[in-house]
Image 1 (cartoon, helix red, strand yellow):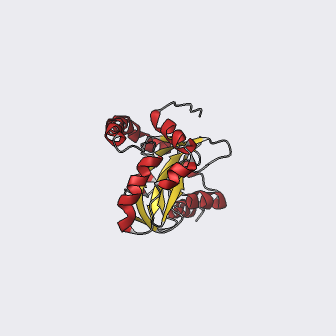
Image 2 (tube, rainbow, N blue to C red):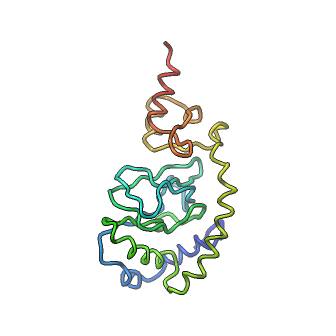
Image 3 (cartoon, rainbow, N blue to C red):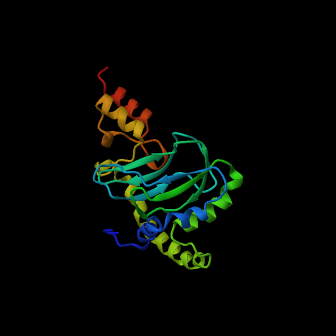
Length: 207
C-alpha cells in the first residue's frame, strides 16, 4: 500500500486489510457488534487522519451522535455513530491516519462485550500476537507527544483556515447562506453546531 506519510500505524492498518479473511473471522468474538470504518469525506480522499475522539472507550453512544473528528483535505468533519451501543475499542488513535475503509473503532451492543471486542481490535490493528501488545505500548507513548503539539490548531477557526462543524451545521449553513468561518462554535473543542449557524443567521439578518 502507498501512504504519503509512511507512518507505522497506517501501514499496520493496511496489513490488517490485506490479511486473509478467514484468519480475521476466526478471532471474531461471538457477540453483536458493529465496525466503524474510515469514511470517504471526498471523492479524492484515500486516507484520513483522526483529529480527535469525542468519546472514550466504554462510553455509551447514540445513533446520530458525533463520536470523532476526521481531517479531510478542506476541513475537519464530525463522524457520527449510525446506531446505539458502546464505544468498545478505538483502533486508530488521535493523530493517526488510516486508509478509507479501514476499521477505526468497534461498537458493542452490550457493555459486557467490551473486553472481548478490545481483544479482537488488537488483531485488526496489526497485533495478532499477544506479545506484540507490549511492544506497541512505547509506540503509543511516542505518538502522544506529537498530538499535544497539534492541539493549538483548533483555534484556526478565526482565520478561516479550518472549521470544525457537524454535518447538520454544514447543511444548515448552505441553506441559510452562512459562511461557517464566521460562526463562533459553542460545541466541544469549539465545534460549530446547527444552532450556532441559526443564531448567526438571525443575528446577521436585518432588524
